[in-house]
Length: 338
Ligand code: PMV
Image (cartoon, rainbow, N blue to C red; front, top):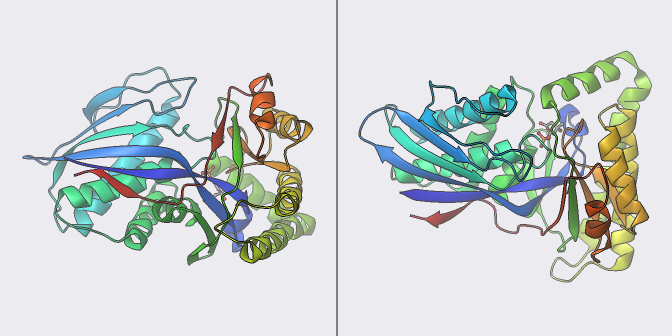
């Protein structure tokens, strides 16, 4: 039996624009997906997934990958979760050169599904690492990231960037620009997450931005501007001491860029009333800055605040179902039990 875990992530800057070759800076956060894998004597794959959401709904199913579970959550989310697991299994079989390997897989995740926190990437990353290790093969995190990207790319019909999977595998803050992926230094940023209990359809939202960008030069400019502010944010992070708590000045400057980034995402049509309400609740509570994270449409916002005010205020915001502090996860994928 092998258990691996991998963190979810927030986008400090750059979601959507990263799809068009601009840089993005996602940061891994301490909300993990844990995947336990036990090799079987036959070629079957059984999946047991509980608590695939933080709140709102709980997914519990057991059965082979061929039997779709009968549960009370949007079918598309469950279908997607199963497809990610199937793709991870294919990658692990390939990596371990064991095309007929069967597994019993248990997934436990504290990352809300489809809410912009990289739940699918974390499950795929932890799943590939656990399944290959269970077969006696160890991959380094870069290789896990590469294979997890292949898996996501396959499930998302080529729409995925490398951001989520690379960040989840490596941990900490990373920068992604096209195929160029690297870890970067960042101080321990005081992230607070607000979750509206919903989810956005990443494929639809990406398609919407693509259409806008093709139709209007100003929308293409907006995407480029997101790239510019991301580069500005990278310069701020590079100048900071990664070992020390960030100064108020640094948080104010990063926060200003996050606010700007949210405005541009809003202009690109990927925010939602609930996300805007949470962003404003965070700002009113004194957060240094706040923005939606991930594809948008619903799901999560991320704010910077060292005090408890933002978390508290979000707790009283009608549109917010859950708020929590999310420490930067310095460790990416890791073995929990072998
Ligand atoms: O909502 P998430 O965590 O799937 O993030 C999607 C981020 C996009 O930039 C919109 C798409 C991508 O693959 O990078």
